[in-house]
Amino acid sequence: MRTLRFLLGDQLTRRIATLTDLDPDHDVVLMVEVRAEATYVRHHKQKIAFLFSAMRHFAAELEAEGIAVDYVRLDAPGNTGSFTGELERAVARHAVDRVVVTEPGEWRVWEMMQGWRADLGPPVEIRDDNRFLCPRADFAAWAGDRRSLRMETFYRGMRRRTGLLMEGSEPTGGRWNFDPENRKGLPKGHVVPERVGFPPDAVTVEVIALVEHAFADHFGETDAFAWPVTRAEAITAFKHFLAVGLPTFGDYQDAMRADAPFLYHALIAPALNAGLLTPEEVCRAAERAYRAGAAPLHCVEGFIRQILGWREYVRGLYWARMPDYAASNALAATRDLPWFYWSGETAMNCLAQCIGATRTHAYAHHIQRLMVTGNFALLAGIAPAQVEEWYLVVYADAYEWVELPNVHGMVLWADGGVMGSKPYAASGAYINRMSDYCRGCAYDVAKKSGPSACPFNYLYWNFLIRHAERLADNPRLAMPYRTLARMDPTKRAAILDDAARFLDGLDAAPSAAPADQGSLALAAPRSDPARRPARDTATTASRRKG
Ligand code: FAD
Ligand code: DLZ
Ligand code: SF4
Image (cartoon, rainbow, N blue to C red; front, top):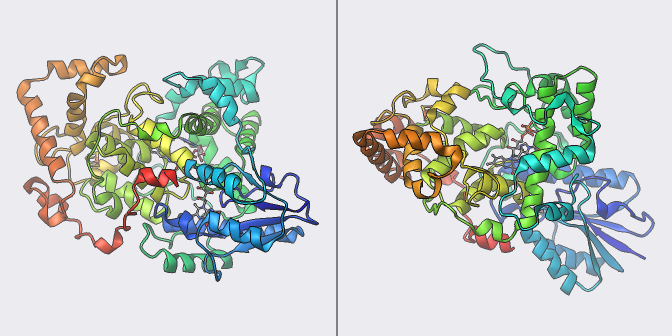
């Protein structure tokens, strides 16, 4: 029996279900670089370069093992530009008895695969993705048809299931969660260790040139490319993190500093999501570091929770609730995404810093995504589909299975509380406590109203006022709503005025900024429209349908 084994670009592990029973004497592995996958949203150039380079390296490793790989490059003559087109051509090229694939990470590709089963010709076997610790079916059974699904309950179940950080049936250290120890700001003058990077090798150099040419209008820069593109490099990067990052990871997990984009974070999400590392091996290695006394429990638990908890949870939630999950808009948010999300040109220093680093590195850490760019989108009432598209474009680790629940549920509360019991709305005080951004900002974080006040301050109260009907009864928001109830009516009116003026001026080019922003916003050069990635004509909803 001759089998065509179709390997997607984010399934780069020898242990993927597609390859488990590979017969090197008869089978062919198909890998394809296709335009449609790079442009269904216009991904950051570094994400495309990372994935194409990792795919090419992985194909070479398979070939070195004596496996036949049919690898279609982006510029290969006749490349149809889509998964379906390339699969059809490959089936015609090789006389195969069947096709084997592993389920994809995105709903739109899942739907494509149903089409292959119906129309391709040879039988198509779609296998479960064996790279996760919680199979889709197990999560679905846990979730049932409950309306709200809390990560913490799921996480405890996963600890019990895997035995990670467990002493029999009890959590190591007597607690499940050390989150309260994970919220320190960085002390002034704290020296952050250098991180290991991987300057582009010959394969990556070639791929970057291709990407710069073929996807010239996409968001982001490639100059600082330093991602590991092979499993060996990813392991080196992870070992470096275990030595220099993990022992301090928990303490400063939520901290932000303008000159230190990576702090103590692991920088492994692109490698994990593409299959170069497995979630189980990184969790086990972190646990071993704790047991060997090389890292304290609150750091190791904090790290393992992100992967065994959050990562598995969002993936389970995505598959259990799609496609309906993406359609909700509980807070009726409809505003267009402001231009500065693409250009980074805004007088709000926190946003300028996070978006600037995102352009340069295709990276921002969790709190920057949640509490800066996410918080602003929530407070400003940006339409969920536009925010989701942005997050799917700009990060090297972005795939819809992980991006969508984080943005739709955690950041925007567009799911009405399936994921989080309350929206993560915060004023400038939070950003000031956790970062040094406010010191370099044209706005004053201590001011609550008026032209020079930090916009997060009045937008926060404006958000609570606007959504009082929906949120005022939420016990976790009782305190701010009590403050609001006691608020002087003139102050309340000033908040509404400031917010309306600010939001009305949002999408304006800097020279047309309202008077209160003029002197601040004009500090930034006028945006060059050519630097903004052209928007797909397809809506986000239609991209999900494939
Ligand atoms: P670390 O901070 O070192 O964490 C270690 C690992 O934990 C990460 O590599 C990741 O695999 C996992 N992890 C941590 N938080 C989460 C989470 N909330 N959900 C899932 N996994 C998590 N992560 C992605 O991989 N792809 C995305 O598209 C993505 N979009 C996000 C969008 C928003 C709005 C938010 C708030 C978070 C998003 N995350 C996403 C989660 C998280 O921000 C990134 O995984 C993390 O910043 C990657 O950097 P790191 O490897 O240095 O992570
Ligand atoms: C993200 C991406 C990109 C940019 N390009 C390709 C590609 O050319 N070929 C490929 O096999 N995969 C690519 N990917 C990853 C896919 O988009 C990913 O497999 C699906 O989104 C399913 O998770
Ligand atoms: Fe951001 Fe406000 Fe601080 Fe400026 S003052 S950096 S806008 S939180």
